[in-house]
Length: 394
Image (cartoon, rainbow, N blue to C red; front, side, top):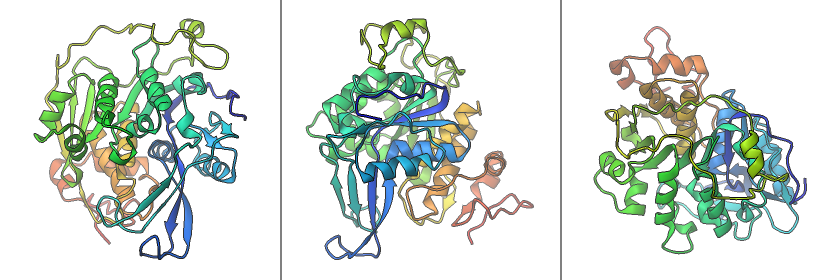
C-alpha cells in the first residue's frame, strides 16, 4: 500500500485503535544507554497495545496508523498483525521513517530509567484527516484514541479533533489522556487534552496525570468536577484502585452498525476524506454535564507482585473496554480492567496475554472479601486455586 492508497478494511470490528507505534530496543542487560552493548527488538505503542491485547482476548480489532517504507515498518505491521489485529489500514510512507526508541531496563514509572526517542518527522506524525482511511477508522463499535497522538503534530491533533467531533454514526470514542510532558512542543498540551477528553464518551485518566497536566489535587471527585461532560470517566489511582463516574441515562455499549451509511457517504470521498468537515451535528439529545449521575463506583486493585510497570495502563483500558463491549456492570468492568492490568504487571514486557475469559469472569464475580484477598504474581493467569477462588503469589 502506498502513502496515498486506501485500505480494504471497512468491515465492522469491536475496536479500532488509532495511533503511532514504534520499534522498541530493549537493553540486553541493566545499565546506562551509554554502557549497554546490545538491545533486543520489540514494539511499543499505547494504542496498538490496546488493540493487541483485545485481539488476544478474541475481540476483532483494527490498528490504524502510518509507517515508513522500511524494515522497521515491516516489523511493526507483521508483529501487530501476528496478534490477530487487522493492519490493512496502515499505509507505508516512502518519504518518512518509522519511529524507534531505546530505553534502559529501569522502571519507566520512576526516574531510574533513560528513554531516547527517534520519532520526530515519523510517518505516523504525518497522520491527518486527508490521508487516513476514515471509513476504516470509524467502522468499529469503539474508537480508541490517546493524548499521545495529539502531541505528535498539528496534523495529528487536528485528526483527533475531527474524530471526536459529534456527528451521526460516530463510534463510541474511548480516550486515554496519556499525558507525556516531553512530547508537547508548547504549553498548550494540557488544554488540548482537556478539550479532547470533554468530547469523548469514555475517558481514562490517572490522578497523577490530572495533577501534572491540570493541577488537580483533590482526588477523583475533583477530576470529575473538571470533566463533567464524558458519560463515563475512569479515574485511576495506581495500586489503590480506580473509580468510575457514569451517567444513568447512557447506554455505553452501542450496537454494531454499517461502516458508513448514506449520510456518511455523502460527507466522505472515495479516499475516506471528509468533504465538509465540522458541519455534522450530533443526533443524540444534548447532555447537561452532571445530570443523572450515578453514585461513583470504586473498586480496589488486587495485590500484585510487579515484574515491570510498563503496559499496565493500556491493559487496564483494554480490559475495561472488553467488559464494556460485553455489557457487564460497572463493578465488573473495573475488575476486568484491574485483572488485565495485573497480567501486564506480572510480566517483564509491554504486552501480556490477558487471562482467559472464564478465569477472569470467575475472579470478577468474587465477593468483596475474596476480591480483597487476591494475591497475583507471575503466572497467575494459569495458576488458580478453584477450591478457594483465591490466586496466590508463587
